[in-house]
Image (tube, rainbow, N blue to C red; front, side, top):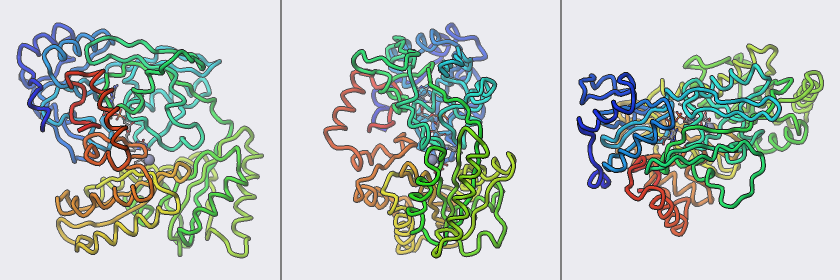
Length: 487
Ligand code: FAD
Ligand code: 2HG
Ligand code: ZN
């Protein structure tokens, strides 16, 4: 890697210095005789696709400690990888070479919660599920939810500008994050931990850190607006005979459910079958899925259970009694357990994919009408190269699912192993398809290491030049998550 030339490796002297800043258990280093296997979880990404060779993992407990470590690394020109829950899907959270890993896992305290405003201030290393549980006792929910909630951290969520399953209702983190505290690449602490809803005092620096993927600094705390928990939530899985029905269905569902609609999630039949095969959530009965080409999960969240249920039931009966029905079946959750289980089916697809094989993940924004065309065209492309079928080094399945309400398709290509041949068949094919529809090559997972070479498909030269200028301004020595986002 190019940046290797100007960055230094961690030495024993550096490790000795780190042990002066942190207590010994918070320094994990092969230079201090830690077995390298102990560093594996920090060096390998969630997909098992990207692997670094860091010798040293640091686990600070305070912002001051982060600042002192970063200052030292900057002076010594040591590359740093900020790491949250390491659930990222673009290779951004693990080292490319031997950068030091700064894990936020020991910075996991809630700093404050105001039940009147719903504003939560938390350390960056708080796990999303732990925050969800914390504010549940105050009848609030986090404005984001994702399948990785048991491991991902709020600092990682903010740094990736994570989308997830609630974006349709509560919008992006660019709206709900009110403030951040971050350590800049020279060790300076930037305190923008505002709890104000309105603050119009010039450039909004925190926005730069939302989605910066650790390239501009380390987020150490987050202030976030959380909504009150809805009084009633329900969901229904709808089976559709054709993909062409998804858009008319979305329009009809929006029209009928209006303010109580909180999610509209799509999965094609192959994605559904895979989730069921790997035991994710509640499978529908055989007669319920007969003839279904794809499925939609609709969630409602509202203020009055009877009112919401009546709306959902009316929706179902009008859909099913239409002369040319858009759906073949609708299965409504009848209990909290069924509600969770229906969500598990959708949320569990990523897990199911990882059980099935090695995934090439594309996470694109394209017009809704192009979702199926994209999956079909990718399948055809692989078929034309002779790569779809049984056998080692072959593609086992191509699936499409995602957040219809956000125009976000997850295209996953699952193979027996990662090969250059498959990679070459997929890229630039998928990116060209995306660009030809004026889409985005990353709707929510970010750029990481995986897509640096493809940034130009979604950003103009002028934009990339200014991104590079911003990076150079914050991080002139290029120590912060080197090789990620920008080449
Ligand atoms: P990591 O993976 O540790 O890091 C991700 C990036 O952020 C890296 O570049 C890292 O350097 C940087 N980073 C982490 N913490 C900090 C910090 N404190 N300061 C500065 N930089 C930092 N993503 C979605 O958007 N929507 C989904 O619905 C979704 N579902 C998922 C489901 C599963 C099962 C899995 C495995 C992943 C899913 N993801 C999803 C991707 C991933 O969970 C998110 O990107 C998540 O926000 C990453 O959080 P993390 O704490 O694991 O960060
Ligand atoms: C989802 O929506 C996540 O389930 C993960 O963003 C998507 O694994 C993926 O490709
Ligand atoms: Zn997603």
